[in-house]
Image (cartoon, rainbow, N blue to C red; front, top):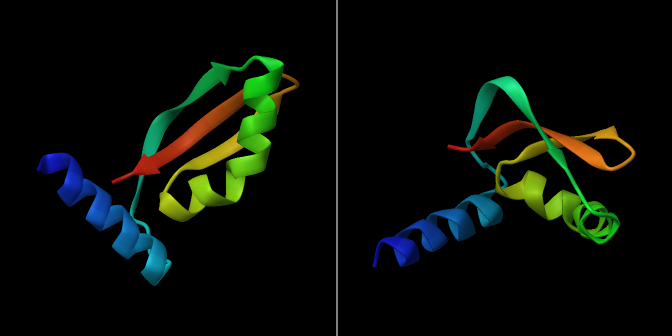
Length: 69
Protein backbone atom coordinates (compact mmCIF):
# COMPACT_ATOMS: atom_id res chain seq x y z
CA UNK A 1 0.00 0.00 0.00
CA UNK A 2 2.85 2.38 0.84
CA UNK A 3 4.42 1.85 -2.59
CA UNK A 4 1.12 2.76 -4.26
CA UNK A 5 0.89 5.98 -2.23
CA UNK A 6 4.45 6.93 -3.20
CA UNK A 7 3.73 6.07 -6.85
CA UNK A 8 0.66 8.34 -6.81
CA UNK A 9 2.73 11.19 -5.32
CA UNK A 10 5.34 10.83 -8.05
CA UNK A 11 2.66 10.80 -10.74
CA UNK A 12 1.06 13.94 -9.30
CA UNK A 13 4.45 15.69 -9.20
CA UNK A 14 5.10 14.70 -12.81
CA UNK A 15 1.77 16.04 -13.96
CA UNK A 16 2.19 19.28 -11.99
CA UNK A 17 5.86 19.63 -13.08
CA UNK A 18 6.62 20.38 -9.43
CA UNK A 19 8.92 17.76 -7.94
CA UNK A 20 10.24 18.63 -4.48
CA UNK A 21 13.98 18.03 -4.18
CA UNK A 22 16.24 17.40 -1.25
CA UNK A 23 19.75 18.68 -1.98
CA UNK A 24 22.61 16.51 -0.73
CA UNK A 25 25.34 18.13 1.37
CA UNK A 26 28.01 16.28 -0.59
CA UNK A 27 27.28 15.02 -4.09
CA UNK A 28 27.23 11.25 -4.42
CA UNK A 29 29.54 10.17 -7.24
CA UNK A 30 28.41 6.95 -8.91
CA UNK A 31 30.57 5.03 -11.40
CA UNK A 32 28.55 3.58 -14.26
CA UNK A 33 29.17 0.87 -16.82
CA UNK A 34 28.94 2.06 -20.45
CA UNK A 35 25.43 0.62 -20.88
CA UNK A 36 24.32 2.24 -17.61
CA UNK A 37 25.70 5.59 -18.76
CA UNK A 38 23.76 5.24 -22.02
CA UNK A 39 20.58 4.48 -20.03
CA UNK A 40 21.22 7.53 -17.84
CA UNK A 41 21.62 9.81 -20.86
CA UNK A 42 18.41 8.40 -22.34
CA UNK A 43 16.35 8.94 -19.18
CA UNK A 44 17.98 12.10 -17.85
CA UNK A 45 14.93 14.31 -18.41
CA UNK A 46 12.58 11.84 -16.72
CA UNK A 47 14.87 11.62 -13.69
CA UNK A 48 14.92 15.42 -13.42
CA UNK A 49 11.13 15.53 -13.69
CA UNK A 50 10.69 13.31 -10.64
CA UNK A 51 13.19 15.27 -8.54
CA UNK A 52 16.67 13.92 -9.17
CA UNK A 53 19.47 16.35 -9.96
CA UNK A 54 22.22 14.34 -11.64
CA UNK A 55 25.13 15.73 -13.63
CA UNK A 56 27.84 13.99 -15.65
CA UNK A 57 31.01 13.93 -13.56
CA UNK A 58 33.54 11.93 -15.55
CA UNK A 59 33.40 9.85 -18.74
CA UNK A 60 31.79 6.95 -16.83
CA UNK A 61 30.51 8.63 -13.65
CA UNK A 62 27.69 10.91 -12.53
CA UNK A 63 27.24 13.17 -9.52
CA UNK A 64 23.90 12.98 -7.72
CA UNK A 65 23.27 16.42 -6.22
CA UNK A 66 19.61 16.15 -5.17
CA UNK A 67 17.01 13.42 -4.69
CA UNK A 68 13.21 13.51 -4.53
CA UNK A 69 11.98 14.73 -1.16
